[in-house]
Image (cartoon, rainbow, N blue to C red):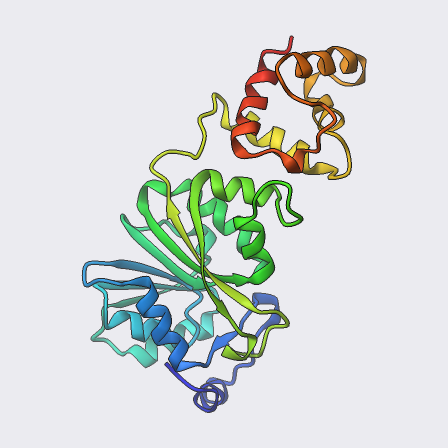
Length: 276
């Protein structure tokens, strides 16, 4: 844990400045660090993977509670600085690399403040490694958190909502003010907990097709469901036939895709599969 004064001294010592292109915002609120640690209910048997540890404000506090921390830092100089701060006798392994290319150890708990630019790619990366993931505690922009937990027929509901909720149980745990970071981000953040589902939220025959339908349904939010999924069903020449087919299976083709729940999207996928 470190304060703003201590962080400034570290930046000066290592001749560093926060890199906007990497989304670097350093935690400078020791009381928040302790609250985060308590919320995560870390245990002595935990294997934690930290995304973007920086100078280790959260790393060092977690290391006191868990068996092992793997700190994955994209910035080479920061990775070196963190290793120097830790010293040789530590239960923290510092990895200089890209979290999107990192293979999780078994039963990992992933923790970190996530730059906006990698939020969706990181969720996809975690999804591909679900058998190795216990849960993830991610600090993300408030707007992103709202999209991830959004319900159907709300402005924030999106492809990201469907993707995240299909694979994970997502819960907002804490709102975090901008002043907890340096430099201050322009928006507030949210601590989001993602718990891996034992089984997807709904059962579908073909996941790729299922998500292609969701992608099409959100492609043009003001268009009707019929217009958005028509290209997946043979194009304009089959419009009347598709409309009749949807109505016969209980779907109003004039609805907008953003009003459909995951369960309805799963049923829509089956209906479109039967359309020949």
